[in-house]
Image 1 (cartoon, rainbow, N blue to C red):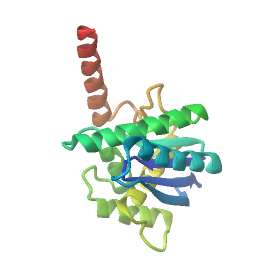
Image 2: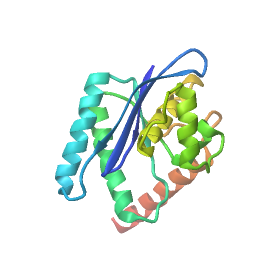
Image 3: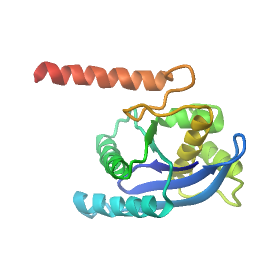
Image 4: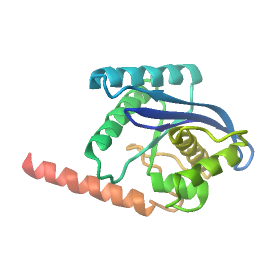
Length: 196
């Protein structure tokens, strides 16, 4: 099983690939950070990043994609950029019939470090250790992408699979973060329907 983890962003988009080994062992395969300049137009930035993601998907042929889902953030432009790149990833995945699972940052931190509020440095340290890397992956977007891939490999190893909406329920049901996200989506949909 080969999983690509994608930490979406307009300026830096982390892409990390791991494969599953025996037990909970994960094997490092590849990591890179795609970049686009803030001075470029939005369509150009999306094209640059989308082309990079397309190159990786076609070259690496993953079995699944683990994509970060942003749950709450104060910086609206940043949230919009993440949403736009996430849409590009899901479009490219659907074209290739690659399943996509989405995880919140806290879910990934909890899986990789054992603590859902871990600092980025702790995530980087654990990713380095789990993959047996000689040096920590830099920048943090690279480590975050690998952490997403590790989380999904472990999730699949426990028999989990994403639903039609890309949600990857925890064993025995949704995590609190997934439940809160689903409820927020339902409320937003109800408001749109009422205005409809």
